[in-house]
Image (tube, rainbow, N blue to C red):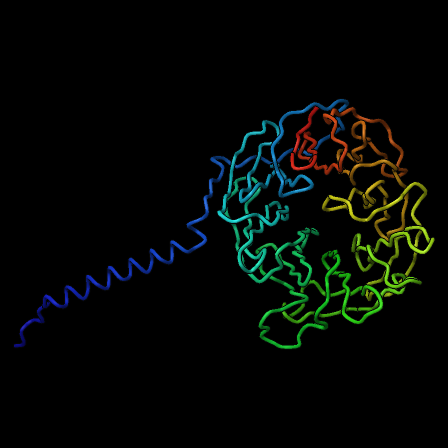
Length: 414
């Protein structure tokens, strides 16, 4: 009969050493991990969905204010106002101003947006604005996360189906689980070389919907900016599928390329591009089809002077039967289907927001209540902005109107 195997002292020492080494390795991994620099404090009870406002209030007074330098227009979900400051994202009860949840990182925020009733927050690291976290809007609990290469600064946009993250050299589209559906532009160490249609281009602006992504880009050696339309969700996210691409003839001026154009909106298979004044010609909106070919051209209504570089994002908001575009000095309504200008409101401080079937547009002495069909101001609700005269971003949660003035969000209610 064989004697049972006996553990020697050296075996015990070796096992203990392995345990210590494993603990040290795990400690080092944790020390350098993202989790070490993250503090998540979800809500004790999720905020309930706010009821849709049934009427526009007659008066508005301030409820609360909070700093949010990471945004230029208030970010809201169906229940929550959201602020971004430094490396922190906070969910605010719109009625009380109480912080009900928070999420903090030890790295700066690049930006945040709302989509799918969640908050998408993008943080920076040595790869650019590459670390993305999706938070439940009502509770602040983490849902999905992703990392990928990115530019040092990005613009975030939600079209109801996808979120776009666009920098100067590359952009990505994400679906609701933060899986990337498309990357376009610069690709470092691509799995499939030459999969991108062009290289070295500067991405000037973009807009998307469920069926189209439109990109305005300036490519080396070309006479003007190029408009490209793409499938937002091709079979392979790393291999863009173009519907069309062409240099925009309307951006070739007598003295060279016309600078300052931007894509306003992509609606169905139509794309609207804002073209600034040049060579004695007035500012206008050029409309293209889904293959990036010109369809129509509209001069802006009288009084719609533009600088095309307003300090708000987004500058276009969908409001029932029109898109409201803030030019920097006016609000211009574009038709949903033909994207033609319908009416203009000179003196607007932002594109406005929809409430109870009316467009609320910030103006110097308050908030104008606009009839969407005609653009006629029905009345103006007085708002004291303490001398602030800059751009005003607006959003609505239930019966609460939110204004962003500079780096502060102010809640107003009747």
